[in-house]
Image (cartoon, rainbow, N blue to C red; front, side, top):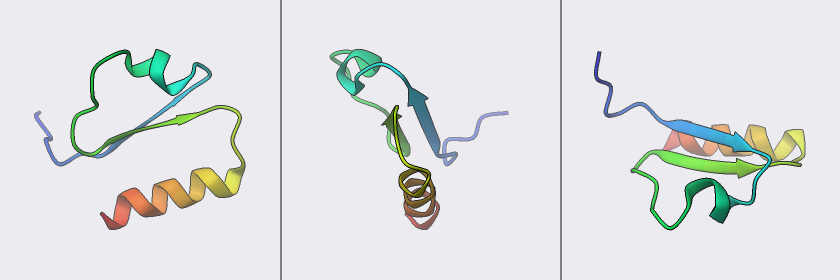
Length: 51
């Protein structure tokens, strides 16, 4: 099943530039790097749901 409207949040221990390389993420995709506060994760999820 193809879901082009599905939003994806990648969580990684690598720096954001290392995680996505030289390329750009597709629309609806974001990266959150560790460590992060739980409030940061919750805020990012809320932001992505509303967008």
